[in-house]
Length: 38
Image (cartoon, rainbow, N blue to C red; front, top):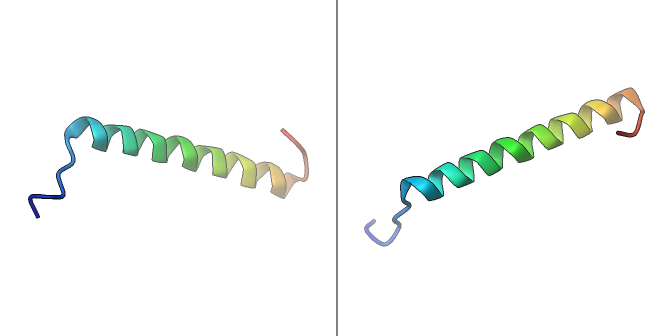
């Protein structure tokens, strides 16, 4: 368990990247559903 160490900044970076990617996917999905290109 001690080998797997993530500091708070790594955790913050991964969380922020995850939110950004999720927002991108949601916007793409929404525009595809409406049938227009962003």
